[in-house]
Image (cartoon, rainbow over all chains, first blue to last red; front, side, top):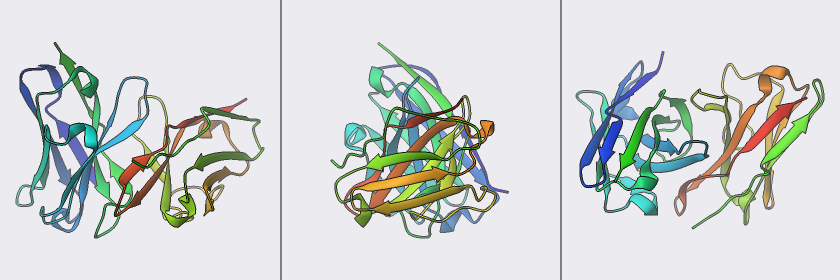
Length: 121
Length: 107
């Protein structure tokens, strides 16, 4: 049974940084690409970042390029999202999601429950 | 950047067929999937690669994609299908893009 558990959310000031983590289990983590997807309060889904299975290929939505960094540790079955200089508009629930194909990015066949990030000035 | 549009809301009577559309330039050339999200819950994949249904998803959910429009069809809609639905596309140029979402109301 696939399980994705996000942690690290909370209230963060815009001049600080925040690290989100996603602990994965129930599948061969090192074979799967992973993503972060966010949802602002009352809004729709927005894809944030992608990392390939071995970590060599990364992609970001334009609005976070240069500020957010996605990484992974296949020895610990963990994917990370480092948020530097977060903005008020980054306030959202951040979901960790598993890519459905060996390559990617494609679609998300499993999602975590999300962690809420609130950015204050 | 690539954009896809969905109607904000769709209403359907129980037992009837609901159709939720997703529009974008030459959308038929891309791979599309659909997610269902109920209030306070994480999204659930209901259709992937345009027409495929993950295990555990009822047969009443089906998908199509041609031209500039992809469609999620729910046949014999049930009250439990009331939710927000999002289309999503991916390719090597756009990476991942979501539609704005459609709120399905089962009256």
